[in-house]
Each structure stands twice: as C-alpha cells, then as structure tokens.
Image (cartoon, rainbow, N blue to C red; front, top):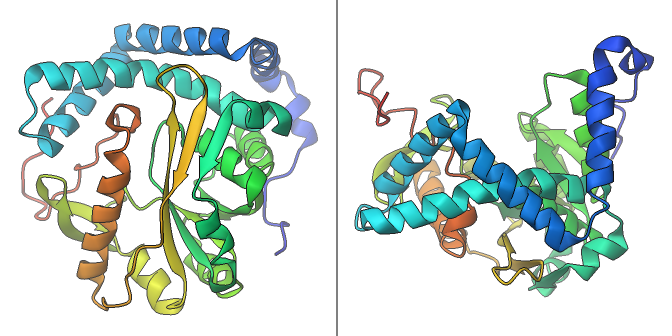
Length: 312
C-alpha cells in the first residue's frame, strides 16, 4: 500500500516558528533516556500537576461525570479513587507516547509482554478489525503489538504540520501504513487485502453516521456506524479487541489480545453498534482507571433540543 499521501518532512520546519518545538522535542528525547521507574515517577508527577491547572480541573469534571453516568452504582469514594488514578495516568500518557515513538524495539520488549498474539496470527488472511479502545496507554500498546505483528493505523491528522509529520513518523515504527480516520474506503480495501486495521469506535464522533445505543448505563450514546460498513463490505473480517495496560507493580505493560468476537448473526447497523459497545465495555473493565474518561463521550444527544449531560 502506497504511503505517498502521508505527511513528509518540509524545509519550512526549520524556520524560527518551529524552533521552540524542536527544543522541546530535544529535551523530551533526553528525558526518555532515563530509567523506566524514573519516567513513571515523572509521568505521574505531570498528571498531578495537570490536575491542578484550570484545564485539568475542567477535564476532571468531565471525567467524573462520565464515571457517574457509566457507573451509577459506584460510591463517591470509588469514583474519587478511579479519578485520582486516572489523572495520574494522563500525565504518564505523555511519557508513554514518547516511549512509543522513540524507544528502541529492544527497550520496548524489555518492559512489555503480550498475551493472545495467536488470535492475530491465526486470522491474518481474513482481515482484522483490531479494536483498540482509547486507553491512555493506546499509543504504546500499538507499538508493542506492532513489533510482533504490524498493521495499518487509523488516525486523525494533526493541525500542526510538523506535529502531523512527527506523529506519523513515530507511528510508522509499528505500522505498515496510516489511514485518515475518514478514509472508510481505504480501510475496506485494506481489510479485503487481509490487513490489520487499528480501529477505535468508542468516542462520540457526532450525529453524522451515528446511531444511539447503550454504552454502560447510558441508554442512548452516539456510536459510529463505521463498524457496520466495515463488516458489511468485508464480511469475512474478524473483530479482535485488545487492552494495553500499565502494570500496577511498576513492571511495565501487558497487552492482552482477546479472541475474535462473532458478528456474523447481525445485519442491522444498530445491532452491530450495540454489540461493538459491549466489546468496548468489556475491554474498559479490564482497566477502568487507565481509560480516557476526559473527553465528552456523551456530548451528542438523540434530540438536538435535549440538555447537555455535562454540568457547566
């Protein structure tokens, strides 16, 4: 698959307006040379700092509301505990992104293990919809899996041209190619060719091409119909979810790949979206504290006149 559409290095990146970004990148690369236990300490410290900033406080309110909506039976103490750990994970995600983009394969392997790789190996000829929900560790999880079995990444281009080039360059260390998340035709073509597509259907992408189905305890969450179109256009493809999680004991990371989920009995886009949300829920429950609760998962309501589920 050609890569000509991907962002390339431009001489304009050497202009003064990018010097600050280059300096920050250089310092970041130096920090990433530190031992992993120290990097984890730095990452959690960044998360604690983030929680004290105004933007962090706003995001914390969103995360708390998401947890309240999804887990109404949880006590205030349980929500507080998950939220505090989650905020620390937010800082660590910055470090882990750098690890994913710049660490050597040898160092990645030293601090990670992967379980269930056979589910990818056994189904390569059919095309694989590799469901990677938005854990804060997702960037690093993709690199860990990609070392063993590279696929095709699906991403949102960055508005900053240099950052777009940088993130694509980093992700190509573990992917054969990258596709814009809006390129449904490219994804279908890749699946029909027997490739692995990294696919994250768990965010609220707006009203267009969405149905409203249950997500945890929220009965009407806007959910992409992309799953329906992928499965309809490539019916032999396997849906395989995975969870990349940070080990609580500081020993690194464990990526767990689950067995394929059967969608063959479903033909309706609402039913497929419902089951996909159930798949996503199962993966999130493996590491609730490490999921990206900071985004407005329920911002789109079934009726445009419905009030927001988020408090101002």
